[in-house]
Length: 153
Picture (spheres, rainbow, N blue to C red):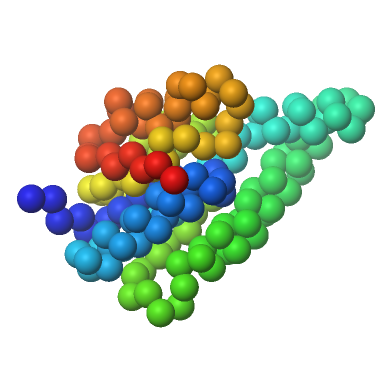
């Protein structure tokens, strides 16, 4: 029987991810596990869109500054996101924000930290194509070396 000690919850801060976090916290309380909450900022997509939208010419320094701002913003959102756990819960939570490609970063985090359970929403707030394919969840499920629990809201 699986008795997780380290649970990973990848999040995009959507309502769908809320359900995964709640379920992971319940499981963590039951087994005395710690919860690692991971958000991945995709710099290329966001930076190019923001530069295009603002009508700016992209420079390496400008993109680095924008990426830094995106990570700082995500770290702030993470703190707000974790407030939903509540102070009465007896769970150790470790938040983390990284830059990169979501599936790659999630799978690397799982392997590097010895995660023994991933709790992920079957849907995120990606585009319409992702709604039908659930690409991040599907690829995490295919690539993970530990059990993966897919949640629905």
